[in-house]
Amino acid sequence: MNVWINLLGVQPVRSGGVETYCRELLRPLSRAPGLRLTILCTPAVAGHLCPLVGCEVRTPRIPLPNRLARALYEQTWLSHYARRKGAELLFCPGYLSPMAPRLPVVVTIPDTQFCDIPDMMAPGQRAAYRAIIPIAARQAAAIITISSFSRQQIIKHLRVAPERVHTILLAPLLFDNVQPWNGSRLPERFILCVSGSSPHKNIQRLCRAYTAAQAAFAKPWSLVLVGKVPPELNRQISAGAAKSNITCLGYVSDGALAGLYHQANAFVFPSLYEGFGLPVADAMAAGLPVACSNAASLPEVAGGAALLFDPRSESSIAAALVRLVNEPELRTQLIDKGRLNASRFSWVECARQTAEVFRSVASESRGVHGRRENRK
Figure 1 (cartoon, rainbow, N blue to C red):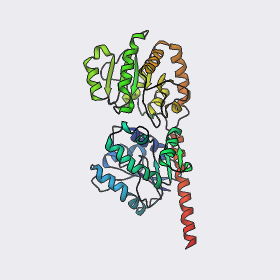
Figure 2: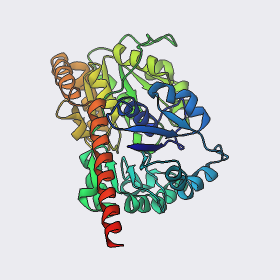
Figure 3: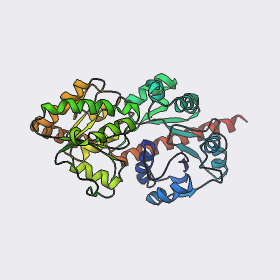
Figure 4: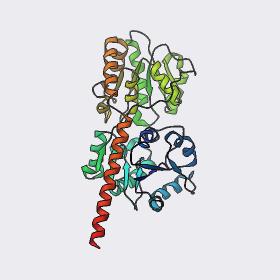
């Protein structure tokens, strides 16, 4: 089966959730029996991502750096072009798909943040998602999502038939190399948090909770933040770095991130909303005791192997941090449970289930086409 994969919206090097999903899924998916994959992407992505997966690559001649031009191409000409070149199915792994597809489309919708917590999205992004994602959901032959929580929300908000929505879980990252941290000096003992600056990541509340919790720590433990933090918070931390015991590392390479997972003593993830929550699975696979939010998909992903807290309560977050630091037996239990929980996730299984959705959609499409031919 000739499957075309739309990666026009993916950016190279600096990975977000969709970029990570595409990279980790495509490696095993490219080896799935009976599938011939063609990736449609920008030249930059072709040079960075595609050598990892060994698929045929096409870079369309449109002004791709112009986001509006790219979006219009995706919505209008993409499926026509793919079908003309022999595609039997189009896979769109990043929320959006053509408005009037000329061939069967499978779309991945990781979450419905634009419905569940709309005030925490930029107004322009929220408006675009509200306009386009419901159409993508109705047009798609099948929808893939990444947790049972997200599946329930998609069925509820987008009003699609439950049988069209398939839950396929993600897995811990496949770090190609583990690099020891060679940047600024790290604290002797620290709690790691991998996150971002979006309001739903809840970093400011975490920092306030950590500051309040330090007085109850039996020994000094620092907090290390990886990823972009809100500018004002970054200024506050930098101004009082010696007293705050909070270190902001910004974006780091995959190898350095893997090294930080192995150097940290514990992991905290305070997000208010996640469709899956990959850092939780990553930390468990790396052997860290994890404390995380009890919101959205996170209890499902944590699988009873994390210390859960209310992410909207600073006192709840602080209490969890104190337990992580002061209770070594609890840390040992969480490490053992976390490794066992992480073992149930697999990118190979994710790819296998994704390929099964492709085959089911293609089979149904051929059946519909055959019935139409018989009526002529």
